[in-house]
Amino acid sequence: MTSAFRKIARITGIMLTVIGLAMIPPLIVALIYGEHSSAVWFAITAGCCAIPGFILTKVLGPMTEDVKFRQRDGFLAVALAWFIASIAGTVPIYATGSIPDIASAFFESCSGFTTTGATVVSDVEALPLSISFFRSFAQWLGGMGIIVLATALIPELGIEGQVIASAESPSPRLDKITSRYSETARRLYLVYIAFTVVLFVILLALGMGIYDALCTTLSTVSTGGFSPYTDNIGHFASPVIRIVMIVFMILCATNFNLFFEAKKRGLRVFLHDTEFKLYISFLVVVTAAIAIDLIATKTVDNTADAIGQSAFHSVSIMTTSGFTTDNYDGWPVFSRVMLLLLCLTGGSSSSTSCGVKVVRIAIALKLIRRSINLRLHPGREYPLKLNGAPMPKELADETVYFILLYIMTFFVGSLFVSFSGCNLITSLSASLSCIGNIGPGFSGIGPMYSYGSFGAVTKIILSLMMIAGRLELFTFFMVFSPHYWNGSRS
Image (tube, rainbow, N blue to C red; front, side, top):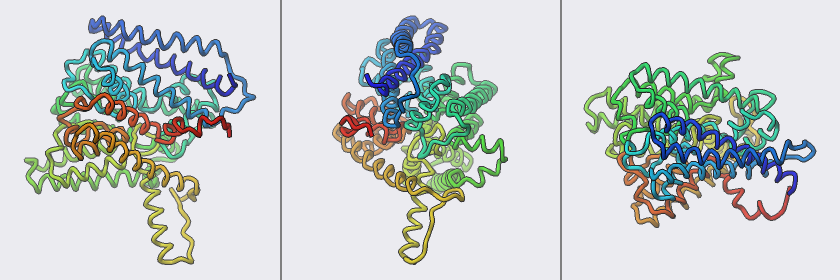
């Protein structure tokens, strides 16, 4: 075994240990509610992950610094971590009989860890409470990234933590706010935990029970979308709760680095950030457009409800949270098209949100404007800038490549889904929702339906698309490329 692969194996051992420990909270919930079968399977899964992981870590021992841990090795380590997490999560869901079909159980597990929020369950209340909690907890674990969590807990990963985290980062670039990435990871998690605690306390104060508040909080701060109820957030019928969730979905889909910058330089950093301004602009414009459409078509009875429903679903879709309060599939075509456009956008970089990311949209718009200007004035120079700083050519190129790969994956995925016999809108929205980690789609997978009608093969394909989307596509496709395994170590 080469030194590089020994490092990958050791990191895999660390991941197994972390995933095993992650089974303890749902195990405790199972014991509290007397769900003994669930408790047994959570304990078995915890042992099957944590014990081999601990042994693997100890047998391999600390790695020396004389062998460079390449970024290509990071791609493999990250991909393995997400597949292991998804498979481990499948065990208690399937073994307890909560979802008796293994392909469906794998789909649900992937949807949890990737914070997609798509479900095959048509009656969520019928699930054991520990399994329902596990779905939300898996989203919380996946929200900031499994690798980021491990790096925050285990500082000894050091520079390797940055290398492998860059393969998982929900951003075109991986920014460090401290000189050592393990410290950066810990600070990011402090913000993440702070949002979690504050929202949990607020929901309790608004009258939610402890269990409901905890599950809703975990799914909200991770922009995941799972709820312990089939009718999702509509179950609570509280405008105040919806407003609070809108605020936290927006916050958690904002670039987390801005919060640290704001601590140093004040709130003006938000006003000077190109991505944040475009992010808020999209939300305001789409919310207003949908609200006007709902009022003009008399789809909603009063203006307040129209604004509320428009704001909630616009924020939910753009932040890739996927929460619902009403059946937006019954809205006018214009409103649904606006929501579809938000599906193509996603939230901010370096946040818990997924999708294309607003920063890439901003870069693409700059490239288009530059191209138009060059055709109008061929002799002039039009340097690309982002937040007032020159934009590296590599970043612009990578943005174009990513968007092209995203579109190609979306259409190929839609083609595979169409083989299941569903209609055009269902095929397109299923592919788009899974690759963007959004959750609900339109038509057959709208807010009133689930993904349960798809066959096993389609569910596996959609599950892989969730993982691919969560890993920003390149990491996923790279490890499946024959060139990755051809022996070249360059």
